[in-house]
Image (cartoon, rainbow, N blue to C red; front, side, top):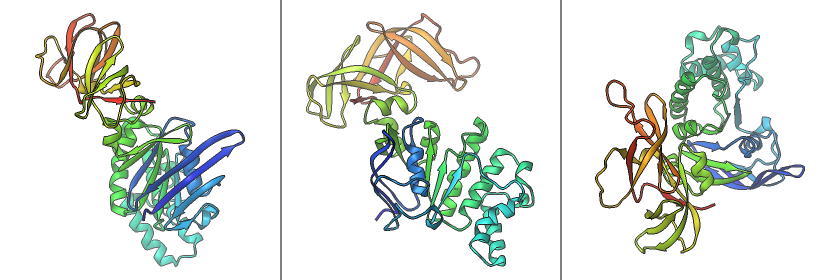
Length: 362
């Protein structure tokens, strides 16, 4: 049985349905992420797990016990907030010890547990400092240590890295992954940052308008989005209007891309002739060059570079093909020296394997 089961949970605020009949489960020891844009319901769902909000219907079951009406302080659950919520007048040790002190632990046991957590988050030498004497990343580690000090069954993290700069956020992502492995506690993490979710998670629930659009591993969500919303929301993606011409009976279909023509695409479900949808195709899956050999199983087009975006490690080239269709391609800047390969208006060819993209619907 899963550690956490969310069963048909609904939460309304007046006429607005923030969480709409959500069901999912989280396994013990899992790093599970709720991902979606602002207003999608992910934070409301997290607040219900914490006990700060009550569901209008449905169940939240933790370790086989329905927690839907259990107050926050009675749940074996802790929350780490974006704002850290540290006591400014307490040292790091005192902040971490606070939950144990309130629970009436023995002083020696508190001291031992605090030192263990300081070591886990690599802050042993900062125990006597106050929050204002520490960096944002260090304060976030203190907040996490305080939440973990009494070993909750579940740790909830509400966009805990969003206030940090990009480089520090990347460092903290690695620290969170390592810490979660070390302590073995189940993490439920909320973020709107797709890259962060892909980097951290064992599984991701992508949410929109109060519902789960797709729940799967990061690799599957990225490579095989279930619908147009997921394809558009997760990373960079070409989403090209398409219609099914015929199923080929071999796990592929022939589709027609508006403005481009017909091509073969791999399927992950059943389709019917005339069904409308989109081809979701990641830019890095596309080859681009001044001249490309035509290989079996590839879709091949000639086009013109409309624009480019240099990002340091990669350059994105917008290539116009067919009848005004623009396809985004991506090439690594791995060659020595200046790595830009094409300029605006250059004639190029692009190609991708038939199974590089996915046919998706609404």
